[in-house]
Image: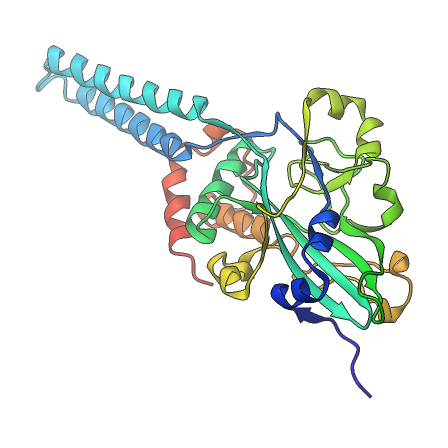
Length: 330
């Protein structure tokens, strides 16, 4: 007796059998907010704290040695130079705001009997955590460990394709991390809150919308009922996919992306051989892998039970985090 399981289908093989239009036309458009932003020049922030520390140390030493030697002109010049440099670094960080937006969509394809799973991976330019201090640490983690700042999300589309007539297919439904009911910057989200929706849910321009900072999803109709979120983060922009920005995701490229360190499970989450898809659930054991690594770094560098809320809470520790992530072994 054969074991029921999903089998991966190569993109070119699927395209030859069914064409690429099926992939492109079913790629879900995304509704995303223009006001989702992040600071890009976080290295300037690290340098700012280092220069500020140098300024404090120099001032303290100069005042301590005042009785033995003190040159007013040199003291003023050095103070002005360091202070000016610090202001430039801080200004560069504050002004380095960039919009977070979807840029392209990758795809993997799986098959079981006459059921196919098109696993779409919308790729965003970045991610910004609600906690400002942890956001900086997270950016250092992305830079030193993941080697890229992009954020990869996942939406699965299940469909049936007739074995006798390849032109005859039935879209069954979408499965994705559902973030309805949370404020966009709410830190307490459930990354395991995946939910299945029949394909009919997407009709009448009921686009899939970004639900929160972690790039979970909800529906446009959900968003319409949340006036505060809809208004606060307007305007909302529709991102549609085409042949230029939909790309097959290969195993070789996943290695370059350090896929094993990401909170993603490539295999289809639902199992059609176990009954109706709408009744099935999913739990991702690695859903909080990145946040757990960050919390572990905070505990090792700053101590157990330390709460971080603002950038000033990090003070001189940013360089330590950068070194910690750089030397981290997996």
